[in-house]
Length: 84
Image 1 (tube, rainbow, N blue to C red):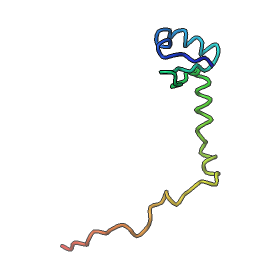
Image 2 (cartoon, rainbow, N blue to C red; image 1 turned 180 degrees about the vertical axis):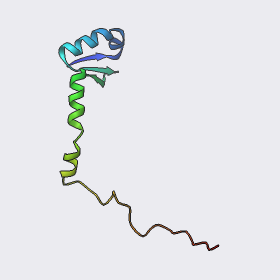
Image 3 (cartoon, helix red, strand yellow; image 1 turned 90 degrees about the vertical axis):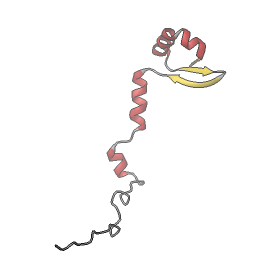
Image 4 (tube, helix red, strand yellow; image 1 turned 90 degrees about the horizontal axis):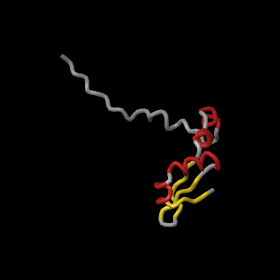
C-alpha cells in the first residue's frame, strides 16, 4: 500500500484513483498520520457484504434475543369509561 500525503492526493487525485485500480488500496495521510484509505469499489462491496450478517445468521446465532422485541404486558394505562 502506498501512503499519499493529503497535499499530493489532492493535487494528483487522478493518479491516486489509477493507482488504486492498478495496485489496490491507497492510504492518505495528514501530518504523518494515516487518515483514510481509498479502495477499489469491488473490494469495498465485498467488505460491506462480509461485514453485514444475513438474517438467517442473526436468527441462528447464540446472541439472538427476542425478549426485547415484545413490549412488557400490563404497563398500559386504560382510559376511564365515560358513560353518557
